[in-house]
Amino acid sequence: MDKIVVKGGRRLEGRVRIGGAKNAVLPVMAACLLTRGVSVIRNVPRLKDVVSMASVLEELGVECGWEGDTVTIDSSRLSRHEAPYELVRKMRASIYVLGPLLASEGKARVSLPGGCAWGPRPVDLHIRAMRELGATVDIDHGYIESEARRLEGGPITFSAPSVGATANTMMAASRAAGRTVISNAAREPEIVALADFLNLMGARVSGAGTDAITIDGVDEMSPAEFRIIPDRIETATYMVAGAITAGQVEIVDCVPEHVESVALKLAQAGVAVEAAGDSILVKGKKALESVDVVTAPYPGFPTDMQAQFMALMTTARGMSTISETVFRDRFTHVPELRRLGADIKLDGSTAQVGYVEKLSGAPVMATDLRASAALVLAGLVAEGETHISRVYHIDRGYEAIEEKLRGLGADIERMPE
Ligand code: EPZ
Image (cartoon, rainbow, N blue to C red):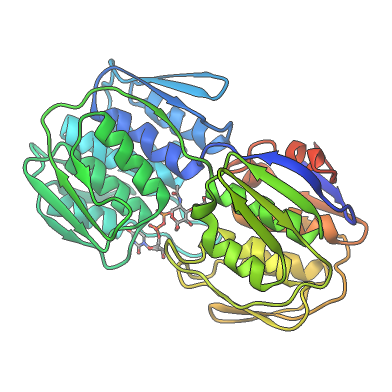
């Protein structure tokens, strides 16, 4: 296993290019199961989660090729219908094959996803939606066993705007008979991207990006070519990197409107954020002001930026209250930030982040993808060296993070643990 070593104190300056969005690539890859043939997906980042999804598809008889940032998916020889535990436990998003397999093959056997470092992550909304579309779904020995002669469209209302359940339902409904209307749907840009890809394949999806999505099922869909949207969480992570080091960072190939909620909070903290076309210029400064954050489904402040923003608030003047409303217990980064000298008190789903003049480097452990990014950001300003172990977490969602940060002037390197 590798670790990342960061020597703090460098002011970041320069330009960083954003890659394709992990959380758009994964459902788009699964959507290729809705047809037989070769689809081409461009601007795909080199991430472990993309490799994991390719492994799941190959387990089903689908062939995946990868040249540079282009993935080709050939579903001509799709022949199996099981996503096994040893693959699903590595990545919860493997459940995205459930909807498309039911729609195109009429059956699916998908392992229940494992837990996460932070709280349980149920799939009851996915299962309920498949049943409402007419599938039989049983849970047996840790597997979701599901069959559907023909899915039937209908009204589906989610109790929570689940990104995954919205994506799975859109894909299943694309080839169901009749109309499906999803109420309280997730509004994330990755949902809009999936709808765009489905429509390129011949589906009839409208309303994506709002909380009501209408899908009129079609009998046939065909392969398509698609370019993945920029990753808004990677974008926001590098915005925080510029802010936390009081640097000046230009982030290019991004979509500023997708990170408006984060830009607003950074501006309130005293960071200069200027958006222009597909780039954002961030100018940090010393002694930022504390701001309060409450995470929420898009377009609210993203839960996937909660840990990174907390790292920024550890050396901001005053007290910052950070409330996590989307996931329970998504605070595994707190004990690690405390090891770097942060003053953080946890009270249920809220963290009170006090001011400390400086962080000091220490050995810390990454526990999940976004917590790892928070530790790297904290290491950029901590005095001395910060050694972050278990960086395989970070490789799930950030392509070449140490190269990109080094390109901005950070003193950071990866080495065997
Ligand atoms: C997606 O996860 C993202 N992953 C997550 O990003 C992100 O944190 C999350 O959406 C919220 O934005 C991918 O897109 C691959 P949810 P997902 O279903 O779909 C509850 C990252 O760092 N829920 O929107 O799993 C759930 O427990 C990852 O890139 C149910 O109760 O999230 C949570 O409290 C981490 N039952 C809330 O809904 C269900 O069946 C939102 O979860 C499904 C979800």
